[in-house]
Amino acid sequence: MLTGTTTPEERPRRTANAAALHDTAHEPHSWAGQFAPSPRGAQLARRLAVRRMEDWGHPPESDASCTVALVVGELAANAVQHGRAPGRDFHLRLALDTAADLVRIEVADAASAKRLPSAPPSLCPEGESGRGLLLVDVLALRWGSTPRRPVGKTVWVEVSVGASSPADPGNHPGTDPHCSRTTSEA
Image (cartoon, rainbow, N blue to C red):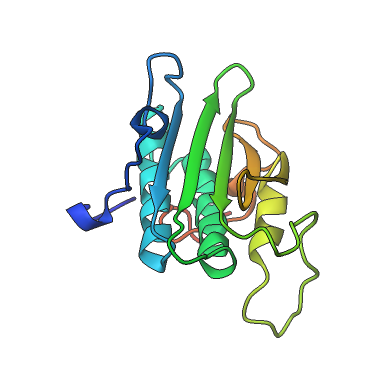
């Protein structure tokens, strides 16, 4: 569960196209925000994704919210670490499809010169990093990336928010410190 408050400097930035950065009457289950390419920006993106999921009826400790939080956290961290460009923020978009019981997560950054991810990297047992896309691959129904115009890329992930999802994080207890599950859960 989230704790603490959001200070003015932590709020997502708004651009000239403010309608694209919040819910609209035409897209009641869509939300987007723009964030500084910093660890604090990635943390805020994750917290706001959990709040949006709660607004959509998925409490912070629910499997759906924990899955979205983990995926947003991984993609935002990758955008900060690998997609940072001077003067360019990263963008997060969430879209809930109630008919299909899924949430589409999109994180766009300014890195276009680097190779776009097509598959999760191979795991190095002694490595300190490199597991984020493996987690995303396990939790996602589908994922991929597309070029972003005029610069950058968008990595997108679709996760199930239904009760009996094969990507249900209940199958992977203890993966998210903000969830109520523990590694001793049976």
